[in-house]
Amino acid sequence: MSTKKKYKEYSFHLNQPEVFRDIFIAELSEKGFEGFTETEDGFIAYTSEEISPDFLKEKYPVSFEYEVKDILPRNWNKKWEEQIHPLVIDNKVYIRTSFHPEENFPFVITIDPKMSFGTGHHETTELMIRQMLEMDFQEKTVLDMGAGTGVLSILAEKLGAKEITAIDIDEWAYENMMENFDLNNTKHITPYLGGATLLKDPEKFDIILANINLNILMQDFESYAKSLKKGGQLLLSGFLNQDIPVLKEKAKKFGMLFERHLEKNQWNSLRFKKSE
Image 1 (cartoon, one colour):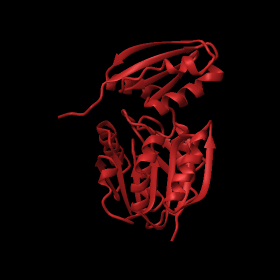
Image 2: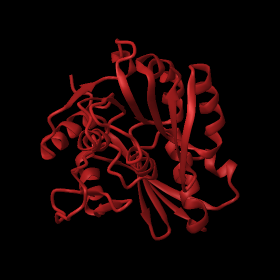
Image 3: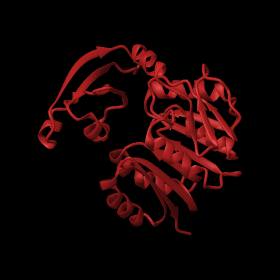
Image 4: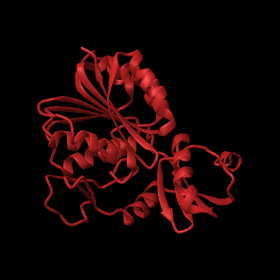
């Protein structure tokens, strides 16, 4: 039986978009909205869940309106793709779609996004990539949780990882990552459809990448800790400034030592090392 989702499109119109657009997007992302497109007077948000954004009216002193309509996944995909532009991160990683021109950078990644999250254009994916560029992936075993388009798995292989496990619970993401692995001629990535229950082997991975959201990170932290080798690194993103203390406390509980913090537009990435 297919598990493909039906989506709703929320069009937001704000009186002060330059002030509240990013704040609203961050709040809605925490609630389960999965994709966003900026507009002149606000933004468009997408979700497969029954989520009411009315809580924003109680929380923030700004007037706004929104309209909701059902949208077919492939229609959203088409609208989204039309607005995607090539991306360069730290002058090293060039992320393009198959219809963008090729350029000469150390790491070129081709991503044709469908319904999944993680083309690199969102701050959390960019933060993960910037952290990864500082790390040693040579001959490492890597787990990419919530792999989405597979962009982080692809970069891990290009950085020298010998074995990458890419997991996502969403069928659209799973299908999309396999397409992108083919586009990039990957040789060392194995994709799986599912969640943290797939993690059976203790101390299997040298590096774990998890760009998801706070609730899932907290829920599955123990599984990550058990699956990470001693001395291994855990790289997290998908959460806001106020979430950092609770994640650091969780990491400490499982013997993880804090190493690095990056932040952009209230989004964050934390890197930990498992004590030996």
